Length: 303
Image (cartoon, rainbow, N blue to C red):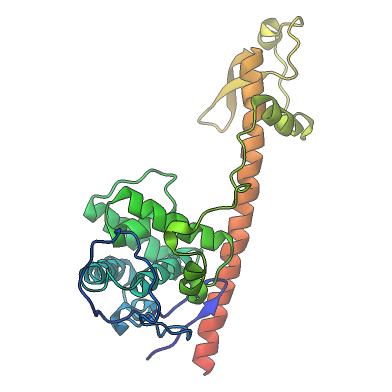
């Protein structure tokens, strides 16, 4: 069975071109485009893969958690084949592989069972390969590294291009054409004003000051706390350092009025607020992807 699902960047089938020429001495990350080399404006004709590499073949499996690792290994082998046979003349196969990575990332985003099993299986595969990532490493980067190896610069270029494509809401099926229009993955860069200038502490304190007007979470009044409070300190607000007790209560260990500490706490509230907004946006996007995926599968069943 061969079919594709497309919605908000979700592609369920990918095709890769067949090998044709020998390796050349061009740069590893991408080669210069040549006219009339597997050139076709029809979606898919420029990157037709073995059907075993389509995401459909993966999602039709019975144990996604176990099968994601071998699937990524096959993608990595396809990448090695591309480097050895077509590297000198065509980027089409590279774009097909990147399109698969892009689609795989989109399929893993969400709270449905499929996405959870794929993420769990990817984590096991990463542990087996002994790759190391930080907690902040994007999912896209993890997938790209598993497929393209450990060359950090190369992985960074590919993963960055795919993340920018996602930010610009490029559909997976449109990715190869979009990369060509940008001049290739090396040329995909964020707009000059995309990188935000780091905010000063004063700016962050101003943004976080909303917390001082938030509803009270509870009140406490003790002589010990009043004894630590200095009326000579001009800082707006204080920091109460507390620990949580076994009975669910909180024990206040110290009242802090140091200006730098108070400002740092207020500034942190601005960051937490921004993170909360981002989390809600991601949850909304994941819910939309879940809905689109379920609708697409339902449409296939009806068909």
